[in-house]
Image (cartoon, rainbow, N blue to C red; front, side):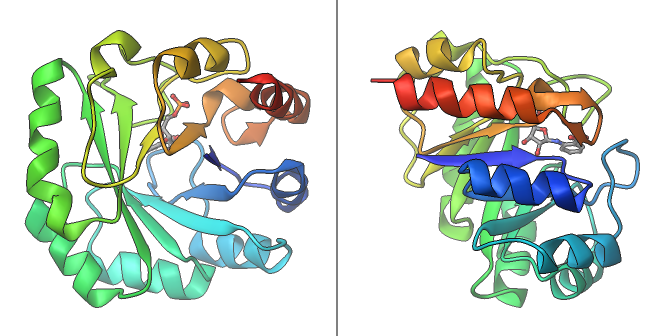
Length: 209
Ligand SMILES: O=C(O)c1ccccc1N[C@@H]1O[C@H](COP(=O)(O)O)[C@@H](O)[C@H]1O
């Protein structure tokens, strides 16, 4: 299972988290977020990293912005976390072949899962996050895990939304996602990761059946 830790802003923390076992690191490229990092800073952090996947998280960004950030930041994945349509995903995929494309869907009710099918031809991976009326992501709110038990998309998927070392065991006792994504659940403050909590997370994952 892939483990993605999102909202990195500091090189030393990113290196430590990769060395603890994270397989994907996420950088928030949404300017309104307190976790925003500029493309040049991402590039500097990425230079220091061991072999790990590096994703930029965007919301309703222009293709130009996404392409430039991927190039400057040396990213190998793009997570679209806004209201991007299947056509938008098709455009990003066409412009960035070889870059993994994740479409994040913010789930308010089980019916929201029906939109997944329309994205299948254009994305590599899905990510399910909790819906919040004022925040795009990093909300710390959990999904209704029970309602996802029959979710079987035709692409690999990440579970996100309010995951913490203290609830990940319960989530994984109900669901078998291809990956998990944590941000605020392993932080001291937005963008400042708590390495003790990240270590606790990996302890729990090692103990999971
Ligand atoms: O973290 C942010 O500030 C953010 C801003 C805009 C879009 C997405 C954002 N974060 C994503 O939110 C999920 C879950 O976060 P949490 O674990 O509930 O805090 C994660 O995928 C982040 O990539």
